[in-house]
Amino acid sequence: MKQRGFTLIEVLLAITLLSMILAMAVGGLRAAQRASTTGEAVIEQTNNLRVVHQFVRRQLSLAQALIIEQEEDDEFPIRFIGDKDWVRFVAPMPGYLSYGGAYVQQLAIEPGPNGRELVFYYAMLNGYEPGEIEDTEGIVLLDGLNGGEFWYLSEDPETLQPLWDNVWEMVDQLPMAVELDLDVERENRMVWPTLSAVVRVDTERPVRQRVIESGADLLIPRRNPRR
Image 1 (spheres, rainbow, N blue to C red):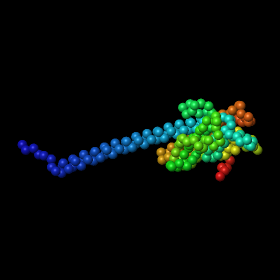
Image 2: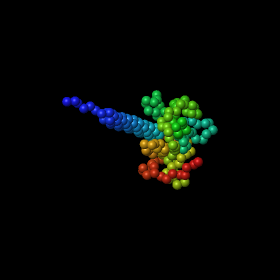
Image 3: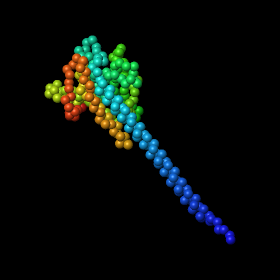
Image 4: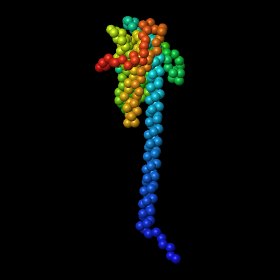
């Protein structure tokens, strides 16, 4: 008996179906690869955000009332100074970044190639000269920021009530707390959790001790920002 073969139409139909199946399979593999890559990127960004958040909180909370600089004709030495875009203080460094001892440290929100950046500077306090920290090479902690601002918790001189301000002018004293707000909203909806670091009280400093009586003191309404 003569066996019947495949017609040209049947062969073309089979090839077309096979091509569609292969195209769907390749598309699925590419989608899975993109999802995996995106997921890894989100995890990396989230981990980086968490590490930076913890590092900044730790350094600010360890601020000490040590003199950064003082001119002969200045009445008050500089122990802590800050503005809405930067803050400078003295604190110990993590062991993996230093040789021990106190360091002058600065956190600054600066323009960068991809938006604004959170940059960290440091220099040894021992032998520190005014302006020395500006000559050091900063470490970019976060980039691609839309903006950001530092806030400082102190006491209103008239009412003696806690008050947030975005400029720290009592340079011979330490604030009760420092807050850092950053706009890091990304397409993946990742945001920066508001950071409020309570500055530890140094019982040896020559200024009046101030106490945060409760966590509610960190929620005091802010003074109108200075422009």
